[in-house]
Length: 383
Image (cartoon, rainbow, N blue to C red; front, side, top):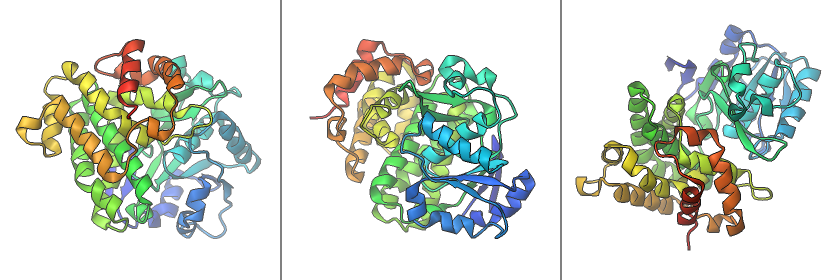
């Protein structure tokens, strides 16, 4: 069992969920609200987690997490938290339940009835204090790394998909058990895996100086690149699942470096009404165009990433790396472009405008104009 203390307390390995009750005792959480989604319930994963809790522990459950969490879902879960007198959150699932859990933990302990004032682009980070309720995050996918991340993405009542972020929002405990990812369907394995790859690449390219985070990002990229196809092909491949879980966590360990234009585009794309698009899949589709766009501003980082994924020296260029990502997308079943995902062309201006106002726009190594964002969208559209 690997106990890792980097940003937060992490228990990582097959069988880690067996430590849940003892870890809750350390935190002092005895009346949790479990935040999850119906897919996790149907897959029997909640039953596996529940079996590790004392039979007499009062447990409240909110399982209505949308694929892209909303401010209304935060209010719905918060009402249960307050009604049941809960003292913390156990978030089980992919990034959506974990992000929702952070938002509930914030709103349960801070003033106001709207989450938007706490959004990063609204200067909300300074309003978030250590009073945030404790969160235990148990991922069942390997992609977002939200179990060690300091932020969460929520679609506000205004329709904007915004991030809340603060060191106080990092879960008190990340309980990462690759066992819970065994059998994840190929489509979700592919989309979440490319999310992890996008995190490692974007954090590595971000201009903030943080050599330890860059080293972690490269290690995560290498692990994910070597094992993602195996995990997609065989959902029971334990070595591949372990490495994907570690890569996803490592990608999020580097978030303090910032992300970039891939995420700036994915966030407003994921907020399009009536079109529930998977975040990691969007990242995969946008990544090739953004790699080419970033190349003039990132020095030798393109070549270093190319080396990590095993490209020969002659292909260690922006085109070579972008083509390698596109080829990986094709091999694991990622849609060929935004068109194949159902994004209409008349949404381009809305996405471009949203990207300009996204917090990730501020940390991309080369900041696009609205016209350049539109070009990136067009290049990611597909035939």
